[in-house]
Image (cartoon, rainbow, N blue to C red; front, side, top):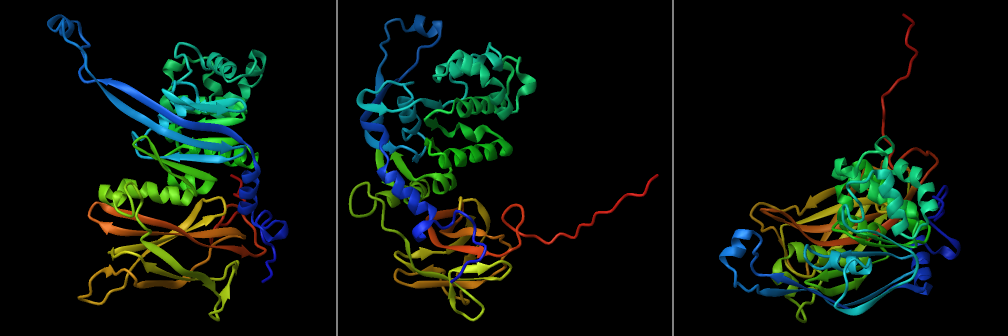
Amino acid sequence: MSMPNAPVGGEVAGGLDARTVRHARLLRAPPVIEVHDLEKTFRIPDQRLSSLKERATHPLARRTYRELHALRGISFDVRLGEFFGIVGRNGSGKSTLLKIMASIYRADGGRVRMAGRLAPFIELGVGFNPELTSRENVVMNGVLMGLSRQEARRRLDAVLAFAELEEFTDLKLKNYSSGMMVRLAFAVMVEADADVMLIDEVLAVGDAAFAQKCVDVFRARRDAGRTVVLVTHDMATVQSFCDRAMLIHDGELRYIGDPEEAALRYYRLNFGGEGEDSDGPGAGDVPDVNVRVIDAWLENERGERIENVEQGRPIELQVIVEARHDLVSPVFGFHFLTADGFQVFGFNRTIARAAGETDVVRAGQRVRVAGTIENPLLPGRYYVRAIVSRNRSGGDLALQPLRILEFVVYGTQRGAGTVSVNASVDASVEPEL
């Protein structure tokens, strides 16, 4: 089918899409980070004698310790130009791993090898002196990241402009808010223009406008072929940006590979309960998928299958899935996203049941989700992600995210953003007073 006015960058020579080309390039790229059999253990005191009174009343008390195995034999590599995600529950060892990679912590065993200049963004306030001004801290941090003092001073204006802190250049950092601190730290890392960026979850401290700036930086660095290692709890970011992702649980590497699969396993660890994570073929294995997609397609008004949709024409969606296990009160959510992974709109649907029927889809049963959706999308490439979940008293329990199909909206009417809206707005010249 012809695709007039298809967006530039959706298709490349030979019919391969950008995602496939990027994956093939990364397979040929050399590793810039190599982590082999990493071990880290912390000794934690069972009781604390912190005050003079406690020490005086218990002069002969001996401290006892327990060991916390933060990392157990972690091995992986990251290739040049790869966007690599690290996910896991709180306390799983993610931040410890990143701090070892940044040489903040020393490993008890194993080794880390890194090529190129490194820019870490790991913990709010690390590397900053609260008694110094932002100007002085920017120069000091630039030098710590490998820049010369002259180069660090030359980039000062760009750092402060990115952080939107020009008015607070001579204010000491101890008077900064946490939001101002995180903007300054991120700006320093961005302007250092290092070969490898290590980023922890502290980005969540920023406001909505700053978060969008971070997303723009991620996209620019990804397109420029820079290497990024990101620790996050935001699975949408993992699925949108990461080429690969790694799941850590209790200091052990549980999975490494496809970002969608890593996100799924993360959801199961958080929402599935202990039993749901440990059932299956072997100890620690993630159980079999709960549903599988039998078919998913778009149709035109004549019921014919199509690969792309004309701008303004309704989206006729057809999806058939099969339950691999019994699904209690299943909810089927459908999200329409841009090629970069930004959600445009979505909706949820439950199973239509007659009075007296149980709200259960048995293993082996198939469910068809079909209907017509208003199409507000501007020309571009989009994909549909389904989230199969089930209702619980405490909220929905995510079971499985599925990327079910991809399509192009083609047409001649361009505009800002990703959707077209009807606006009853007039412009007129005000009469002179």
